[in-house]
Image 1: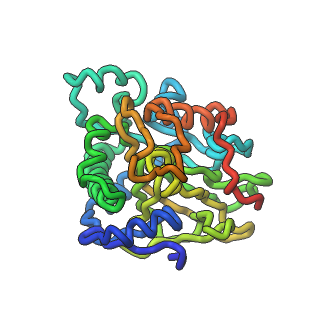
Image 2: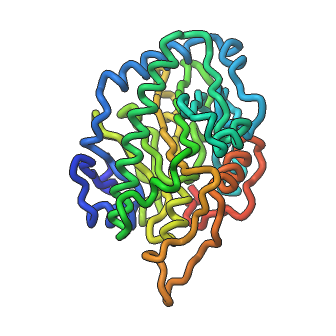
Amino acid sequence: MSALVPTVDLAAPDPEAVDAACRTIGFLQVVGHGIPERTVADALDALDAYFALPLEVKLDGRPPRTDVDRGYAAPGDESLSYSLGVEAPPDLFEAFNIGADDLDDADPAVRAERHRHLAPNLWPAQPPELRPALNAYFAAARAVAHRLTSAFAVALGLDADFFEQHTRHSTDMLRSIRYERSPGAPDPLPGQQRMGAHTDYGIVTVLWADPVPGLQIVGPDGGWHDVVPAPGALLVNLGDLLAQWTNDRWRSTLHRVVPPAAGVDGPAVRRSMAFFHDGDHDALVEVLPTCTSADDPPRYAPVRAGDHLLAKLLGPRDLVATEGTADARLPTA
């Protein structure tokens, strides 16, 4: 783990330590999260079996449109740097995305977005263990996300349940990602990454990742720094909506996943499961009174969470630079 990334014990989070970490780096390593090792292992085993299926089988699970965040994404389908307004070659990952499988269709807010933000999941027929295993991990990661937002609220001087009123039908999504370079595969194109530089779009991301190199974040010095999680720990990073809520008191963290060095022997596999806790699609995100003053007025106009998420999602998938999102913190190398 990089010395830049502080560790927070979620069993007893210290509000001052949480605030300091979110002010300085916006990226945490979390222990005491309570997700059982078996829950993680079952999800990974099922995902290994799924990603081992022939490509043409997995392609049957692609979503019908780029604004539907469900199902299979093939290598080269996206280029995350476009979300920052930066053109780059397609990213070298494949992924499988799910949302909540237990949404209440009696809720008008759910029905209103069943075609898009809250679309039904696209479960493959094989392997049969994928659905129960990912649903179990989804539920565990969602519980961690809610514990984190409670700790965040306290650190911001708010009631502990502040974010709950904005996450009643949250557009949560679990993206399971596999990076694999087979022996003899060509080297990446100039500027091509396993996952291009980007910030996450919502409130907070809870990430399980193999303890192998690849993930890099931008530190306070403006340079890229390697981050490898400790065994059993989760990584947590802040998203754009939380940065807007806090008027940049807390910042969403630029990060990327770089390819293994040229000439590395073996398949060079890296796996991760990213749970995005992004808020209700109809939640109005406004700068918090505790994060503004006469000397530091609001930097952001109010925005609907769903509108913000949709604009960010479409750029990388349509390979069109998202307008108004260029980030001066993006290193040139």
